[in-house]
Image (cartoon, rainbow, N blue to C red):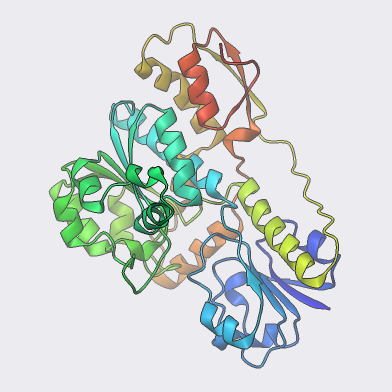
Length: 394
């Protein structure tokens, strides 16, 4: 059995070689000639999977080791009768870590507190739900917007539907807006350019805007205008229109810029490989024997003494170095900014290289925090952010 995998899937060879002969190749370079004689195909989001790739092939099963599906022509796979899977939720905690680290970076540099601000989370699926937990743990008021989820809850008579608010209300009230929607190009819930000039015109002045969803959910020109007139005070951009190409004018203007790596914590990528491996084993009717033993984290422990933390602002000052030591988001931004002066073609290839050679980053839950003199409130924040703690919260 011939199996073709994106080489950026950790443990891909170790897992899939149990099923057949494995070939690894960069995802964006996978073409029709590569898949023609393959039986199984496993990729991440950089490979466009549809007729252009698969027509004339013998692919029996396809697996995508990421959350999103906008790179997959699902109707084509269904017409061809090709079973497929994705990995919903695999990197949700990784993205939540990214949002938390970005906020601690911004608040530290600009001298504002997070507690007490209103955050609007647009898109409350696997990722958005984790982001809500992180933000609530930090003392923010969280407003949720997700019309498809709200409708499903309402149809089921679930009172949780009442926790969701219209987009217009979020735009008017939120101090922080963070996007976690899939990219959809049509229909009642279309998200392409969900935030356009009209949406920016309704926003609270001085908002912080964060996009770790898909690039085209933001209208780049409208965002630049909003940054210019002060509607958006700070922008954090991980996803870009036209990837792997990207707008250098936005890269120069945003506060934190990264090459679509919010979900690239090692756990998230391994979870994606594991999810499609299990699905492939189920398809083939074989037992999954998973070789996914993660290495020790770079920062296995951290001692935190909360004796001087009397207020939530003090607590944020204690948490900031912990969060930014486990995930140095500013280093990611620095690496990205170094490629911005390259010619466009080199920028695009360098964007992909930053993703494929991304250094190991571990999630917050890989670090144990050794607590001393910690209040119940601060302990709860640590647990809400996912850190392991060395003693029960008192």
